[in-house]
Length: 216
Image (cartoon, rainbow, N blue to C red):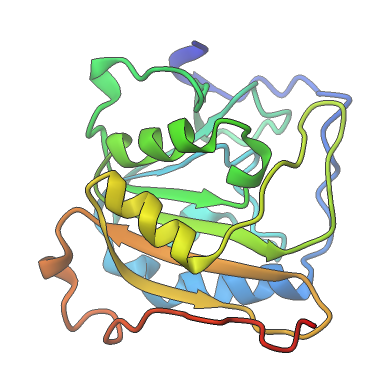
């Protein structure tokens, strides 16, 4: 397991990283969704496999969590950005050390699970790392995208994410999807170990079903 607590980004370039590009509409959508509730959370926040923590609109996701007392980014290998962010090297497919269990109050996972083959282990680790909240953003419809460094394995449904939360002891408290015909579509899902804390803070939960009916 690759684990190094805590390491500042080295700034050393990784030649196979995909260059950060302008935000596509689906990224803008997920940013707007995240801004709706990120300010509600306090305590320690971690962005898992968050690379440079960029929202591709000129900000970092760290800026969204205004109530955070600590903010950490994990990556499988060191980020090439000399950003000064607190960075942890972490393999999401490996067993967690006990020191990482319930380490953070909030876990953010933005479009990384599709690139992890052992997705069941990765989601288990997402949930074990968190004391309460897990925020997962994943593609429902997207073209295959990969490099020599990372592959593209999975697409997800809302039902899948609800079940992944359930088997790891979380309850879904919020979910939404892009709903843009003939475009990339993401799902955003929030799970909690203490859903009673969030009653009235999120809209009343309704399960997404039969999304993207325009697909034929």
